[in-house]
Image (cartoon, rainbow, N blue to C red):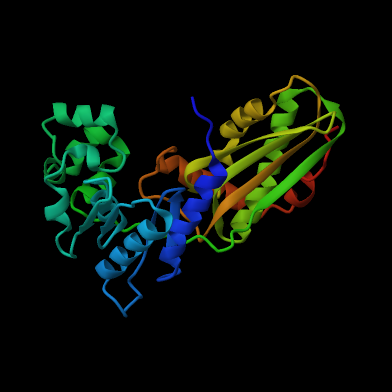
Length: 313
C-alpha cells in the first residue's frame, strides 16, 4: 500500500481542466480526471481541432496523456474516449452515433454492470444492436424501469445536458456545538440529519445540486477528524444521503471519546436541478416522491423554527 497525494492530484486536475476553460465556460467535471466540455458555441475553430489542441497542451505542460472523444452527446463522447485508451482520440460525426455504438458489447451501455450484462447475454442480447432491436416490454423483463432509457442509449440517443459547475464553487456548511460533551452516536447522527435538512433546503432555494459531503467531528480535547465522500451523481435531496451520513459519522469518529462539535459541509455544487435520466442509486419513482415531499417541507413555515435548535429537550 502506498500513500496517496491528493493535493498533487488536484493540482494536476485543475491544470488539465484549465485548458478546457480556455475555449469554453461549459465544463462539467464528473471526477478528478474525467469530464465533458461543450464546444457548440465556439464557432471560431472546429471541435476536433480544439480537442486536439487541448490534448497536446496538456501533454506538453503536465507531461501526462489524456483520452478524448468528440461527439454530439455525452454517451457517445464518453465511450469514444475509452475505447482505445491510453492516449485515445476518436471523433464520431453527427449522424453516425448508431453505427458507432451498436456493434459494441452491451457492457458499454450506462447502467450495465457485469451481472446485468450476463443476464442480457443469456437472453441473446450480447451486443448493443440486439438491445436496440428488442421491444421495451421484453427489455423490462431483464432491465426493469431502466429499459426505456437504456434502449434509447442503444440507439445512440442521450439527451442529458452538460451541467457546468460554477467557478469558484460555493459551499454550504453548518456546525453544531453541543451543550455538553456527547457520546451518543444516534443523537449525533440525528443532529447531522437535521443539519442536512436545513442545508439542502438552502441548496434547493438556490436551484443548486451537490456532489460532495464532508463530516467533521471535534473531540473534547479540540482535536478533529473528518471524512469526505462524493456521490455518484449530484442531488438536492437530503433523503438520498441520510444513510451515507450515518456511515460517514462512524468513519470520522475514530477515537472513542466524547464529542464537542459535529459539522456538515456540502460542496462540489452545480447550477440547476440535476437529475440523471438513469439514476444510479435510487429508483426514479422514489426520487419523484422524495422531491415532492421536499417541496412541501420547504414551504412549511414550521421549518424556520423547528429544525434550528442546537439542543433537543
